[in-house]
Length: 151
Image 1 (cartoon, rainbow, N blue to C red):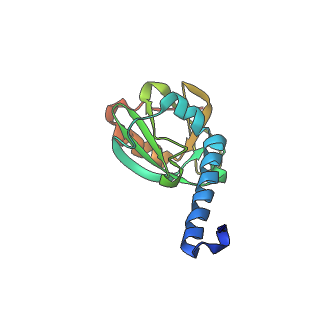
Image 2 (cartoon, rainbow, N blue to C red; image 1 turned 180 degrees about the vertical axis):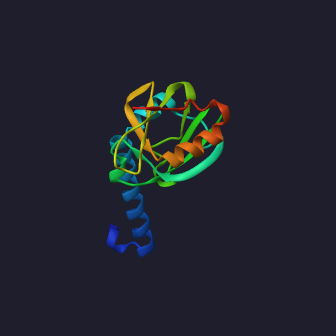
Image 3 (cartoon, rainbow, N blue to C red; image 1 turned 45 degrees about the vertical axis):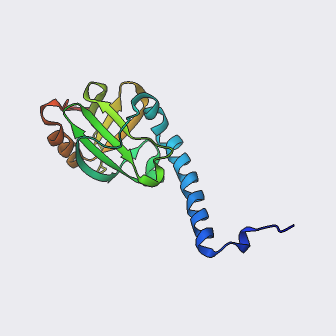
């Protein structure tokens, strides 16, 4: 009987397996630490991206700033679309959040991320974005953007 071990596999196969393992671990960590799982249960989108692409950004979603993966942000008159980095998408499906479910609040702080976004159907999840990204989202949304309140 011949028994194969991981040492007997070619190095490209070992590298591919290692990358898949790392992607699996980071995907699960991102889902649970960032609040993406809560958002996905309330706002899962059936398509990966609609609307006008605004930017690939490193979003501060819950504790995800510890992991630091970029997400694609898109917007149109119906709402906000967020897609996770492709490596993380098996665990973090694309999101669509209608404008009626979003509130934008300017936070007074010394950081460069002054706008907090809250979600009506996922009350414990939050997103912190820059004022510049907020402006780009507002442009892509046209007149449908709900505006920013000062906290």
